[in-house]
Length: 352
Image (cartoon, rainbow, N blue to C red; front, side, top):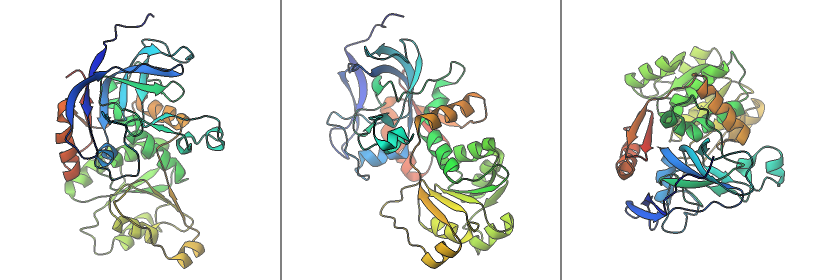
């Protein structure tokens, strides 16, 4: 298929410096390098980390102004670099957080590309998906099947990938129990569904009767509200008859993590996904050693993880409510994210 008609300029949400007002402006459409794709973005998810990067709350260098955030983009390839062989113009593709890696270091060779020291980050070190056209190295771009909803698949490219990999990192087997803190939010909602699809039993922890209803509807077998229970640890131990075999910590506070250390089953694994501001981890080393507990971080996922996460979605095993917004609405979305007002995921329609 020949190259499509590509304009010289495009609409993008611009940040001129960290924390500055976000404005939609016209900027040039970028040109793909020899190993890159130019993707016309149809939809882009909005992630908490987009807001944190804009506010300078994470140690990631923002792209040089005019900077563009966003890293959950779904769209169609409109131009390919001369060395690209795995995509053609017209293919559906994703633009995710990991935008490019060296593929030659020991981490990349072992399949841990997300830990490559020379990683390019979409919306972090290069312009992201809050624009009509975005670049990604062809080696990192996931194929999006023709049968999936382009708006709903966008959050899978980061949120879905992140929780799917975190669940794998717990080493919880089918039939065993995984606890998910902050289970009623966007990440947690996807984590419940991926856990069920893998065959895990789910204990959800969150606050309020609406969250309980929501989590159980998604497939959680147990629900614990820390604000209701006098002793969260005892409640979890009782419900699970000895503690969950693994924990995925998504809640954005430290207390649920402290409780998890006490209720996780002996020889269990706690996987930390969230990044509470200025949080520290303090553990009882004696208990850690004698109970043989593993505590680890989990960070997005590999290219293989991405393909697997999309496959679960394409087979209809994962669904998440989304709210559609226009590009100009992102500041309003950030405000709602900060207040915790969005259930599910916010998605930007670049055609609006």
